[in-house]
Image 1: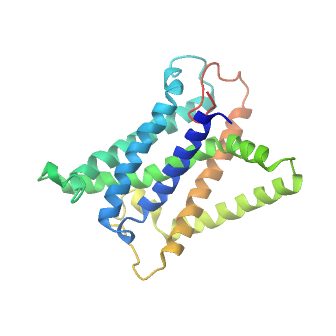
Image 2: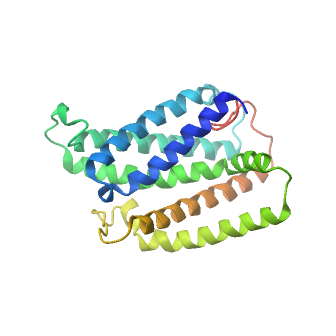
Length: 235
């Protein structure tokens, strides 16, 4: 495996871990949340630098339904990251406190919630769009293809997605996304492990949706992308 491909995978894994940590917010402490958010933004920039060829191909090739959907998701992820960064700087009490920003905390808090929860969903969908490639790489590392292993993984995916629906409702994530609830509730008596089990399941739900939606779109009649590239693609 090429060194640049390995670096891309490492950056993507770090971003996924950071995303999960950031969703805990109050449970990990405001100071840690701000520093992790700053690292997340740096990783996001590194991610796009490593995948700059994908950006360079945006105006080239034919836009199939699959490519359109992929591009829309990437743009939405970018917007959510920008919302989170801008609002995070305004709300900062530690990392960017030296900027002495006096006002705007009310709108910034709303913008931060929107960026965080919609970003969580869009990033999970984005992972799902490239799940085939990641599973292919994992399969090569595991050796010979195994129908049994494939069935086990598909069953596990369905079970995780089903629990993810329950966790999505239980955690009120939809109410935060639609701003029906303006304040995020955290149970400080709950073990952090249980919090992450639920959020990993919700991520798994949208990865599963993204994966099968991608398969459906690729199966639609039409030519394959010409020069479209892929944000996770080996270059």
